[in-house]
Amino acid sequence: MDSKENERIKELITGLANAINSVFSESKEIREALKVIEEEGYHVDLVLASVTRVLKGGQQEAQDSDIKYEFNNFDKSFLKAVKIKLDSEQ
Image (cartoon, rainbow, N blue to C red):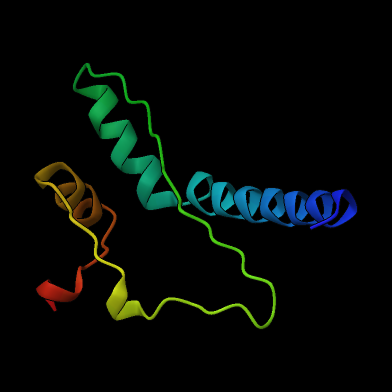
């Protein structure tokens, strides 16, 4: 990739990150859940990790079945709190 193409990809990924941040910051449910926790006397730092992979046309993509995720109990309770179900829970 040349530097112009790298810069364009960085711009696109930044746009994606901003869109994701906007969704979470505008979520009434998340704001309410955080408020309840803070009212109980706790401070919350919400850190979201995202794995973003950008492939140029023609590059081979991994199949969903090739990607394995391991969720710990904290991950599972957080996802449940924001009403996200794992495939194994459906």
